[in-house]
Amino acid sequence: AAKLSPEKLLCQLRERLNFQMIEASDGPFNTSEWEAYLPRRNISMELGQLGQCAVVSSAGSMKFSRLGPEIDNHEAVLRFNGAPTRGFQADVGGKTTIRLINSQLLTVEEQKVITDPQYNTGTLIVWDPAPYHADIHEWYRKPDYNFFSSYKKYRNRQPEQPFYILNPYMQWQLWDILQENSPEDIQPNPPSSGMLGIVIMMHLCDKVDVYEFLPSKRQTDICHYFQKFFDQACTMGAYHPLLFEKNMVKHLNQGTDEDIYTHGKVTLNGLRNVQC
Ligand code: NCC
Image (cartoon, rainbow, N blue to C red; front, side):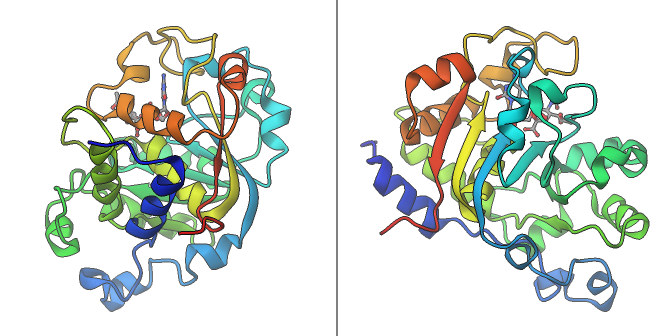
């Protein structure tokens, strides 16, 4: 596969990814029952056009980074799954505008997600690994994790908090672009929450600084900055095509290699302003 220029690649992301969240008019969700649960306002209206945004990976190398103040200086900050800020503010900041969680977390740790106040800040988005290019009905019948009842329980507890379900198409549209731009066959599993969060922020923001997705000199085998758990697969990937995601993000980086090495920082252009 011939590698596209960064400009062409941005156009592919802009033109081929469907950034919509599930709405009450979508397929199996167009029942009066679901209408009561799905947020009424779409996410772009909810958040507005954002300027400088930050994406904070959960990598162990965030620890001792002292990036907290720089991260909090962004207009909006996206975090993943159970990644905490409390107790780690100096390294990861305290602001959470969007939290992107996977359906496994919402289902398997339902009680924790519903009761832990850290999930109540900002806008939540949940995504679920769908079958390859399955349509929304097929996915609805056979989600990877049946998170729908947990979603409803959460909504009953926090009806005022915006909480979206990512449409199931986007992950495979993104996977196709990753595959087309990779020299090898990549595993047919959806992109990581990290990569999905990065493109969501590229859609919503003018500029996106991503922290410790491309590892800095602080990289070790520590999986998360908030846990003592060692596994190289966290950084290199096993289920998710993480290595290929990281190559693509490196290709799109507008910042310097020095910024990656010292801060684990990559700067990406938002998709709104690209000329295709
Ligand atoms: O670990 P996880 O990922 O929540 O991390 C969020 C994103 O940060 C980036 N990351 C993380 C660690 C690391 N050392 N390097 C990194 O680059 C990745 O981009 C990652 O996506 C997920 O993607 O949803 C994932 O979720 C966990 C787990 O389900 C949740 O943390 C909830 O407990 C998965 N781990 C397991 O299932 C054991 C992980 O594979 C993917």
